[in-house]
Image: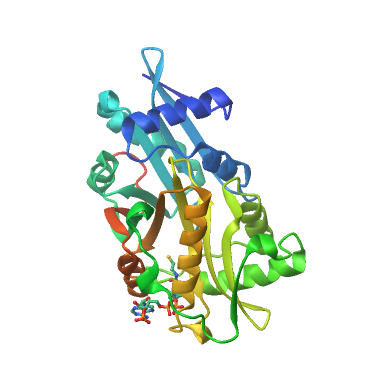
Length: 315
Ligand SMILES: CC(C)(COP(=O)(O)OP(=O)(O)OC[C@H]1O[C@@H](n2cnc3c(N)ncnc32)[C@H](O)[C@@H]1OP(=O)(O)O)[C@@H](O)C(=O)NCCC(=O)NCCS
């Protein structure tokens, strides 16, 4: 077995995708998303990735990085995937990982994995413990009838896609950033999240190769942004992925989130998508209630695991 640094070349990205497809055919790698994530790292972010080779072929990938969505100081996120025939290499990887992590002196390690993946059992056996769970779920538009959900919009509320708003202008971007950060702070989670600074949000969100300005809907009250629900392209066939949905506290329980979701689903149908995917914290009863009512079907949970303190060597 050989472990070599990832070269960030097209060939290495393809090798990563092949490993991921072999390890988890139900959750293939979104290559465009990964490349965008790699390119839009913030200054000072840690990102070390390695490919694992055996008998001349790539059989695994291993990495640690500053958590992209919640860049908490002192935390590093770890990830690995191994082809089914190479699972026995896990223990060697753990020793290698601890050695490479040591110079960064992380206070804690995070791993995000599906509960039914071998990686979950591996991390738990190394002492990682559960922080929280998210449900991935999917709606099949072929079986979805919006009629029972349709009701008039509350007075004074208008829904507009980003494509019809001045989203290239910084003043508007600042307002959108303010809305989204407000809403993110309100998403139930085990611990408060670390927000992206405006410039980081701007580069990551507005340059996302999966961004669909026509499928990114905003609710406006007197020209003020009060709600959002956005769809992104996905690497899965006939599929769009939901980003953040949220409504300012001052405007909740008036049917605005429902109206935004219905508008997004209507867009998705016209776009030719059949499946809509979303991911919600298990503690987010309001959002889960809405998605359950619409008919989203849950898949195995994605679990956030944490290890603290970080051992110096394999125990
Ligand atoms: C979840 C959220 C978007 C709902 O927005 P909203 O505009 O108040 O929702 P709606 O008025 O359209 O409600 C539609 C349905 O959702 C469910 N729902 C909404 N809020 C709920 C709550 N607090 N408790 C239980 N069910 C709730 C209900 O079924 C509701 O229908 P009803 O009012 O006829 O009972 C809003 O609470 C929010 O922004 N939360 C913070 C951000 C967040 O967590 N977003 C999800 C991230 S994945």
